[in-house]
Image 1 (cartoon, rainbow, N blue to C red):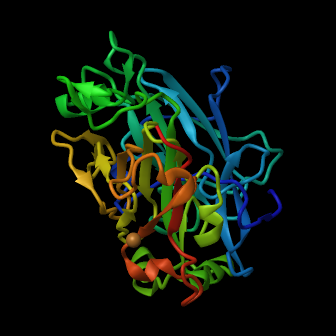
Image 2: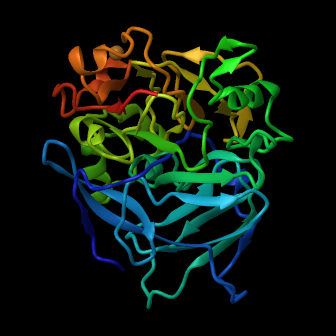
Length: 387
Ligand SMILES: [Cu+2]
């Protein structure tokens, strides 16, 4: 058993999303028990008990994933693979409680791994083929939604092997051409075009580039329930949901000032450098992220099984709704905001970087510890310079 570890608030984290659902029917078929193939796992995950320091300096007991033997984080490590590849994940449980592991929307689930009492060698392997490119939530699907909301969630990313909206014109996109919708392909084809048909175009600058992306995973924390469960209580899912009174609202495990200053959370770039944002909701509250400065294009939306559905019609959103367990990929185009004047203002009126907020429109989520504003689900994004 690994000693309970301390996660200091504000450490560099990354995250992912979710929804409450009944899992047993989805579980277990693909479990190759106890490792025997001898091949290296792509990911070697461990589940541990942690104490997490929150933005007001208080500490709550939670659970966390980590790469085996390494520092735990909430959300857990980002797991990134290529479409069609065989993915092997070893999971070991060093927590005091039983846990599971599941990737929503992929054929990947392990249920009820008993707490590990031995020499650190026993682990359960899951092996599956990565399907449709996009963003997925991985969670502890056991004891849902409790273990997930108490910290066991993260992002699983499938990248395309040949992700081009238009290969001849070097216009990459994060999806496979055969499956992406015409609207997605035309948007990614338009990025970086200064003119279209002789007219000034919407997205001058650069095409999107693989790796130009951010992940935002939302969650909520009720410290009272965290402490009761750490003390040995076992509420049912319905008791947990009925008594859930979150006092902290997190993005990538962070709140307020900490998320705004986290480089992995705060999108930055110049005008004409479009960025993908993979948004996920691991918690129980519905969030409504809202962004200043630009609108985003919602590219994908997960269905009830967690599979990303590529959108047929791309709309610009000022706010997009994130129900529990939902994942949505959005494109932040990094266009010049329409209210900034052209060149001369640069040095005179306002200086770069231009800082814009993203904040949730579910207003209670903008607080922490019962009222400290704006220390909740909020971050910044920056325009560092002109085209
Ligand atoms: Cu606002």
